Length: 213
Image 1 (cartoon, one colour):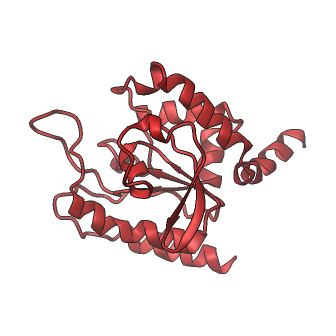
Image 2 (cartoon, one colour):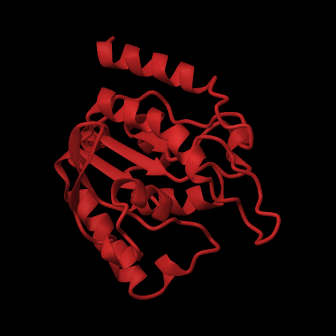
Image 3 (cartoon, helix red, strand yellow):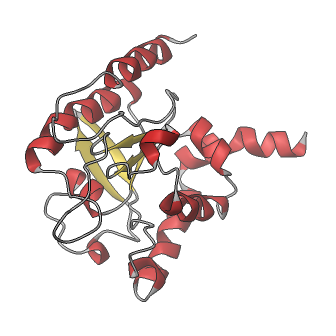
């Protein structure tokens, strides 16, 4: 077992005990401790993810994994080969006034950012895939509109490590962005860029070999 995997498992175990944000609703939701050159950053778990014990476990996840299935990686293989992080790791609760889920506060995002930074230091990913605007703005705070970043490959630095970023829109059923233009075209472009990235090809290789064997 590699030193990085041991450290990552310890990190995930500590993370699952985090109670730093009193207004957040546990349990902590996190992906498997997978040592990978690819990291996905979600926004925050929904109400279903906590009881199910894994990120993107409900409706938005079905859409997300349909996107990755187009790139020859099933949900099971994705979860086993990509480290799944998030801006916040607990369910923020419902927005009583506006409906939908509450957007985490700046203070909650700040407290949870130490976990993401620790993961980047440990894994030193080559490719990071932020999903949704809250995740994207952790890497590119100046971004105002999704069209400024979706469909492009850019470099970002976090925790002293520089990596490629190919962002995706959030796959929420409540959003029409990825189902209308220019979002549809930009999503296709982003998925194509992910498929061509060396880090994606690295995690895809064992899957392809298994299919041949």
